[in-house]
Image (cartoon, rainbow over all chains, first blue to last red):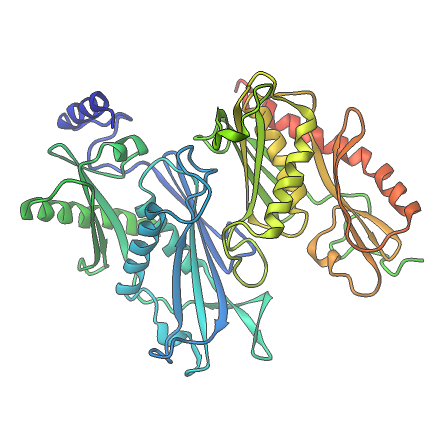
Amino acid sequence: MNEEFKEHITKSLTQNMRLDGRKNDEFRKITIETGVSKTAEGSARVICGDTEVMAGVKLALGTPYPDTPNDGVLSTNTELLPMSNPNYESGPPKIESIEIARVIDRGIREGKAMDTKKLCVEAGEKVWMVSLDVIPINMDGNLLDLGALACMAALKNAKFPEVKDGKADYKHLSKKGLPLLETPIEVTVVKIGENFIVDPTEDEESVLDSRLTVAVLESGNLCALQKGGDKPLTAEEVDKMVELAIKKSKELRKLL
Amino acid sequence: MSKYKKRFDGRKFDETRPIEAEAGVIKKADGSARFKIGNTVAYAAVYGPRELFPRNQHDPKKGKLRCNYSMMAFSGTGERIRPGPNRRAKEISMVTEKALLPVVDLSDYPNAVVDVFIELPETDAGSRCAGICAASIALADAGIIMKDMVASVSMGNIDGQLVLDLDYAEEAFEDGDVADIPIAMIPSTGELTLLQMDGFISPKDLKKAIELVKKPMEKIAEIQRKAVQNRYKVK
């Protein structure tokens, strides 16, 4: 890490000023577009500043897990494409991408975004398997929040394929959407020095001390947390970060 | 007489699907492009010249061109595609490299690599051709010295009828033989840099196919050049 660069960022944050001119608690401008891939059953693109991320939903009929015979299956995957950033390399998923996928998955799963019982076609035999893929096109920070947002937009956009002779007919999508119940919104608050910021750029992420991702439900309750970064947080700091995350989640919710 | 008298989507036999091309769509990359032909979309990003690992691949005379073709998990009709390299993607990456190599001059970058990443968010046949078109624009956008664009499109032969730019429905034509011939060309010289075929075709028809594809290649190259020009147009 470049110490001088960190000092420079921290100093300006103390004056509530980011390198790109934003205030500490300000997101970059976000646009959401849905139905961006016709081969996916649901898809969305989120553009926020220079970060662009796509999410796609694929639906397939499969066998449920033996311990949950009445539930559909959700799986979330993130591919940090080397196309999207010079620091990403080809190869098996690294811990950064695994963490992003798991935290997004946790928000959706624990927030009961989907009624998995309604994904059951035949108990113990056949259920819908929902695969979510989060893929950055251009990565300039905050992939977790923006990936989660893209996922919710893609889930809302998804339509079931028609079923013919017990098989999914992908050429014909029905009008029926996924059984969605809740919309969890994930907001990551980043601590640099004594400052708290949201929607970090790649530069800001490179100098962060700690971060806290908070998945917020419409009621204002929380359904997932993830602390990251090398430095610890005090209870008071967690309090402040959660409060800021809840406040920002209301803004993001309006975009969906 | 061919049983394929009218194209499923109403196109003329020598007509491509609608094409859109844009350069500079990925800011982190040194050069980038998006190429859309019908419902097949390809992104390409170029990084480099940059340091090449592993070192044993270093060439003190010139830089290395390294292409990586990959389909996104949700880019196919039907079930999800498992991410990561598979045999098909590796072969396409290799032939893409060979398709682009003849036009680039990497002699200024000894021991370095120019990486080209091709990603497809949605496909409806012709994905390797779209990838090559996008990569060619991205290389130009990255400022790599090139003697021409590489244009690419597939020719098809459906039950004896030659058709340009097959889509998936045409590849799956059931009432007769189908040949799918992906071609890449250096339009200014007419040289072929990619030529593959699967299916069934007479040598006479193959000759005709290669002759017929020249004109559309020039048109595609023109769209590619426009994409690069538009990126630097003063508004």
